[in-house]
Length: 280
Length: 334
Image (tube, rainbow over all chains, first blue to last red; front, side, top):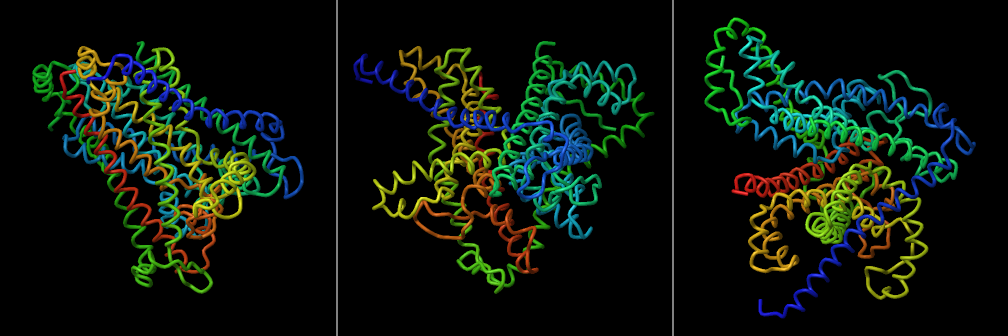
């Protein structure tokens, strides 16, 4: 380092500036996306959006009520399947698993959560849609559950590992069986962190579209039967966005605004739980 | 019977072993419940491996007819004709590779710059404001990026960027042709916007795992902030940052909705970035629900299988690289 101090200082400033530029380049397109969702979404949002099904082609008005309902049903179904598997699997990893087995499972979960979500759709299609001879909300739920399980497993395990061993010992010393200790003491003291993971997993699957394309398929009408094709908000945003009708584009923007709002609400709630945990 | 207490949790390793020994007789009586609990959790934990294996098995099984029919020609042929029963995946492979690699080349430097800014340069409060923002952005569903891409970005590219490129750089084969809006270029841009928050937030975690002592040593020698970054931080986090970039690549290859909405969905192999193209996930998304024959479905399955195997390898590699940094950091004296 034989360079002069001024040169080095100058270079320091230059590189710092460059990093600031990078940060702005990252944030500007994302700011624009938000701006357009807010601008187009707010002007397109109406009471009809929450109460009506989509209007037929070319007719103005209509909403995405069936899509929101279908999404809620499928998310609930995915949670029913995915949460017990994810949470109990995490208990195995943190309480029972040998280190090598746990590492393999952890690795598999990480790799699985990076698999394109459209693949889970294809797998659910071959496992459920083909044998049951029809697209269904149930198949959609299973596809979403496959995405949810690795996320819940990893976040729950991290939280369980942070529970001090003395807490488990205290419970065991009182003669509480290990399974009750795990569920009532260990899991409960990690509850806020576990909830954070669950909320983030729900937020993630709420926006998933690709795995629903050939499982739930979508539905223009009210669909309350989980064994039939079912509407979903992200699916409707997709098909309305690529359609050539101005009215449908407006509905898609409104749908995007609702979806982003729900996701951010979930994220912020998750953060709140995460924070109270640290504070407490 | 072996109720292993995790010893990682506290300093009282000896105490916990003694405690579990003491409680054993009482627990043994209730072993019934504990044994069931243990088996149940074991099954659920191993179900992750089962899901992974099942996915590979199903995909491979369903692809078999196409693999038998076309062999290696499947990845070498350009012809995709559902009516005639010819299926060649080359245009989709080409589109996936070009769009995700170019998007990654644009996204990685930006992400590293932004992550360095957040962790090293920004004054404390600003950094802690930007970091969660980037994380929120990484969670936006891809269909929303696609919506914005097809209704805002593509028209803008068509009216402004592409005519400019054609006028000034049209002599290059990359910018040859007419401004369609939806194009390879649009896919590259939207992928870049989508993977940047992901790479940034992982790079940030990697940078935070760099031991403080590394930085202090550099600062103690009189290094400027940039020199500290260059000699102490970047080399230390190198493999983790590479892992973050590769993870971004995995996301870009598998990204379905946003790309399907902006790439134009035409199975071309063209050097021009302005012409519409197609990717592996996009053709699955567009055609899978309406396959015309068993062979058509099987060909799409084979594309899915290729996609899955590629992303599995890419993700496994990325995870190993990221783990190598965060684990060595935990082991260090920091």
